[in-house]
Image (cartoon, rainbow, N blue to C red):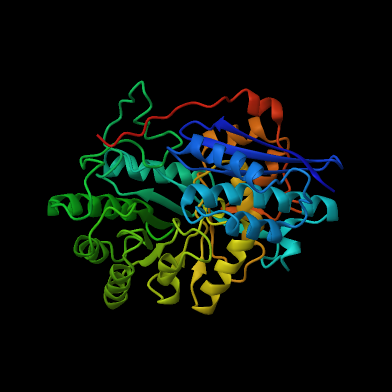
Length: 413
């Protein structure tokens, strides 16, 4: 079997673009993958094309993803950054799709799975909204869709403005972006700058009210997008004790010592679990991997599409397992990415839960660009294990063509 063409294109997905790669072969078997790099869509697309030419992939056997990973990573000088690694991921995962289809088995079986009996637990995004009441209502909506674990971004930091700008720089709170819209805190403010303690108190009020309304029937996570200092994050950890189950990226992810201090502080007060890792790029990203090897986090969150693909994800999971750290893959992405996440969760021993956006817009997106969207449909907070070969889903090319690239402006000011 030989590669005849690698086709990569950008597909509009409501508030971001999906980078869809298809590898065609002389045997009529096609493999596909999806990756996302917001704000760097074009760069990643061209990186896939550059790799195709630089490594001369056309004419090569696609059933050797491990060999081709080494060639793509080692035979190029600039392969340690997110753009290059994401491009490598796109090609590597499409190769595994081909390999699974040729053998006639799901990808997870090629890695020794399944490690889940029949279904994978998933969680969804919930917009914070512009008030504690609105946040509680958004949680109600997610519960009605069957979810029991849900995540929001920092209330007050996000979700205060309801009006949507024409250039797409702000989103409706009920839309696909769980960040909702811009909040009181300027998006360009970094973790070192002064922040009013009143902001932290307002954030805590959101979760206090949510617990008052929903009790202990749900699990709540909050994603801080690395916008807090250690001192501010510790205040939040203490204030959210008993209200929030997990805090994601509370401090900049490269601040391993800060994560360690925060985890110790949270353990001491009986506070939430600490999660991070979505910006990890391959097993060779040693600084980022220290959050696992030094047990600075409870939950590790590498993104399949940005960390090297299935092979690298399997190795990263092994390092995490050795250090008693669970995995909850980062996945605020599209339908094909959900299918990839299901395969990955089903071949690692320490899989915890898979991230999904999990709203009606995403369901509609899947119905448009997949021929069999039911494969990734959640029910009561779970998605059934795919049983068909490869990724288990097939692209609807007509639906993809109906969603041409759209530039989304995500300004901070």
